[in-house]
Every structure is written in structure tokens, then in C-alpha cells.
Picture 1 (spheres, one colour):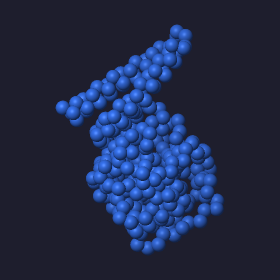
Picture 2 (cartoon, one colour; picture 1 turned 60 degrees about the vertical axis):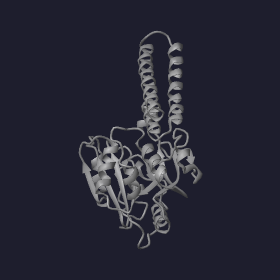
Picture 3 (tube, one colour; picture 1 turned 90 degrees about the horizontal axis):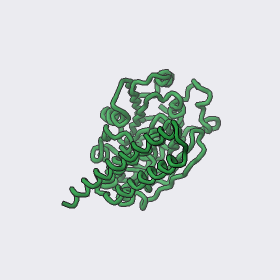
Picture 4 (cartoon, one colour; picture 1 turned 30 degrees about the vertical axis):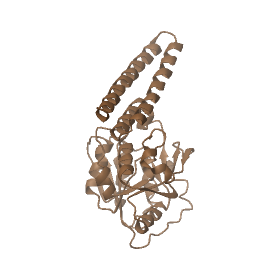
Length: 317
């Protein structure tokens, strides 16, 4: 398979570079790739994600789509592009981590990768990634990436280096995090650091990548690989307290107790910010809503401090 650019279902799904796009044909004997696409009710963006994949030569690239039983038009989009997939599953699962784990159970590629249904892989990047794995002794490869708004307006450009990929650096993941759709790895790395924790819905990629950095050298390729699209429906955007507490537990798990406590201080700052908001508004429904939110956040802070204290006691009996 070289390219399979089909007609658009939604006119607004056309990517900015499609008009003048020229496919770079993959040479023979490049390592194979398995890409898991975990989705649920992704109809508003999924077509863009799939078309971004088709702006790469998909020869010896296995696309495994794992849908959690969507109720929107997701599966209509999947049906339209069905010929690009090696495997499609649509049934209720236990969340994103569960979908990715099950996808990798059936994956056969030399290189593993996942692309969420609201992210973008940039044109002709897969060939460069595959060449790197072919010519280097590499188990984990990290490229550069953009975080963007939903219209692809850049928010931040993440440029990594080998120094930024050390275990000790990544342990402070709240400050020094990777961008998930710019990370590729081998089955060996996955078997060592995976699978993902299906009970963690927010920091499972941090857990995986910190675990990989503990056991492998993370290589850097100076190539923009992906757009990580940040929008209103992002899990971490709407559940910041939950994502912060999940990350702190991951850091403590990998021995970063000081880093976990620093991450929890972000939660404390959130609490203080919301407490200030509560004090500035008049009595009424808004006050009650903020009070409830504040109480929930206070509970998060107390619980996570206790968990970190327990982890500290285990590490220093």
C-alpha cells in the first residue's frame, strides 16, 4: 500500500498540506510498523487523523483501530476508510489504556506506535522514523512535536534532545514531559515497560515513557513528527486535578518522591486559586458550585499527600 487518499466525508477534514502533497515512497526492507488508533466518539476529528496517516507511505504499516463502542458517526468514518485498516474492533472496553493494550496484543510490527483519534502525524515522517530504526540500535525514538489548537494554530513547539530524554530529567514529568504522538518503540521496550495501567486514565503514557527511560536509551531524531491537538474535549483539559494526582503517583512509583511532591504542589496552587475565586464571588448558586469544586479538590490534595507519605515510608523504613 502506497497511499489511499479517498474522497472527503466532511469538507472541513481536508488537511492544509493535502493540495500540494507529494508522497515519498518507502524503500524496500524498512522495518514494519503497527499503529494502534484508540478511539471513542471521535467523529468530530477522526477523519483528519486518518488522512494524516494517508499522507505517509503505508506499505508494511499495520493500522489497528480500537473503538470503545462509539455512538456518534465514528464508525461511519471508519467504514469509509476501511481499506486502510488491518484490524477494526468496535466494542465496549475499559478505556483508552485497555484499547491500546489489546491493540498491541495483536500487533505484528517491528515498531509500535499509537495515534489518538484527535492527533495528527505529519506528512512523510514514517519513512524517516523507519530508516532510523533500521540503521541504529534503537528501542525508543522520540521526535519533535507541536501542541496546537484544534485549527492547528501552534501553542508550543517541543524540541527534544538526548539530554532531555534521560530518566532523571523525565522523572520531573510535570515540567519535562514528552509528547506522546512523537514517540515510537520496539516490542522489547513495550514488553519491558508496558502494558499500560488500565486503571490510570490520565498519566499512563508518563508511566510507560518513564519506565522506558529507566531501562533503555531514548534516542532523539530532529524531526517534527506530530501535532498533539489540545481542545475543549481533551481528557486532561477537563480534569486537571485528576491528571496531576495520577502523575504524582506515577512519579512516586518510579522512585521520584521529591518530584511527586512538587507535582502535588501544583494541585495545592489550584486549590488556592479556586479558594480565592470562591472568596471573590457573592453568595448564590455560583458560590455553591465553587464550594463543591473546592471541597473535591481539597479531598484530592489530602488523599494524594497521604499516598505520597506512604510511598516515602516504604522507601525509607
